[in-house]
Length: 358
Image (cartoon, rainbow, N blue to C red):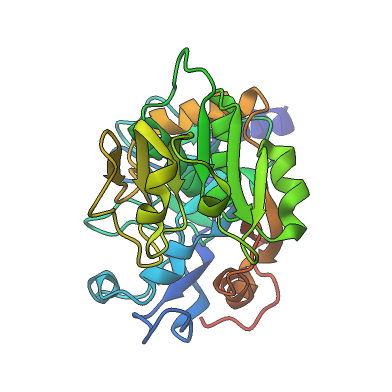
């Protein structure tokens, strides 16, 4: 009888009661001197945060590295973010809901979720840790088609692509002979973008990469892949043949080079990154859009991506995985500029052996 009472009592204890008080987290103590300077990044032990009103606590299974991660690390915005102590870094997160704060009703403890912790003003972040806080409104249920590592590689990159495609007019219902150019095919935003273009009915999907990635990109839906070591996309295309150019690389001069290929009524979307800008002399009838920042605040966009993933139309491409303890290895792999798809960060059990700062 006593054992039965104990067992029944255990069932009444909420799952989040078993959340530990301390966790491992990759933090920064301030901004680096330049991009690629990771000397102020370290893995430490710190208190597990508690969800406030409208927030959920996610037990993180995996995260990933985006170029914006190491760009932020050299920005002055970190001066304010680290004013009161080290700042936990990381945008992408996939894991399980460990606790819900007051005012939450959509998600429950045990739900498997994904999110982009990329809200600004103030700077959010916090994914590179055993536990992370998020607004319930920005967290979506992950697709069963993805394991946690795969799901964690997608939120920021696929949200960026999805929102850029929406700005360009997707879905293009009834559009015939839809031709889409994605300037960089093998990177973090490139691999989901190719799949979204195919999902939205593009008959020709054009991109560029190294030859070693041709087979991968064609398996995702690319129809034309050019070797950027030998040529440019624009040299290979005829005039007035492209409906949408998604410049996810953001190189200098790309907008001007792309204009002859675009049809009147076409759209050029720039994701700033490598010094690129919109053309000062766009073709008549072509719309230019400077993408700006990804909106990480609405789970509805993640839910739309989940629906696409559930159809098998959004697969993850993860080149390498690193444990949280080797955060410098993960950052270096991304910063090298040669990553295909995404670099994953996988959380380990508490107390894993590593040279931690306490």
